[in-house]
Image (cartoon, rainbow, N blue to C red; front, top):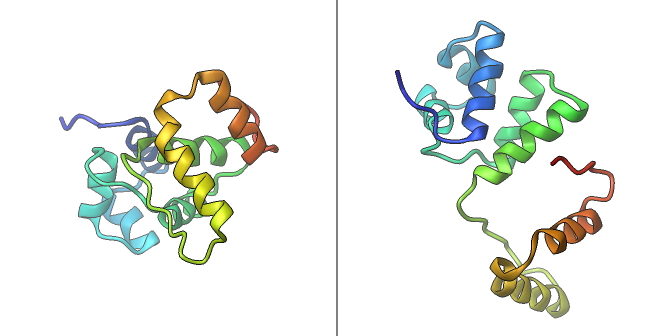
Length: 125
């Protein structure tokens, strides 16, 4: 049996299996290849925000379930690309400082930043 690589892969597979769908069924429904979906389930590939949105819609997730699913997807990414070409200098400078100092932030600081950035999202511990 294949070993799943991260929480998002496990959550994706759990949703798919609960609905009795094969990789082919789900991949056809959301418009990606079965190989891509398998790679995501195994933690070898990352799902874009757009693809995660399609999965949430396909699985009819809402509220807490959709938030958790999206959080699993975000936490499974190894890198993040940020297009700052159309942002003002203040935004670009803030993003650069954040990126440089990110690994130095404490858990409390990260929670405070997240509560500012996503005030309507309930913290999950």
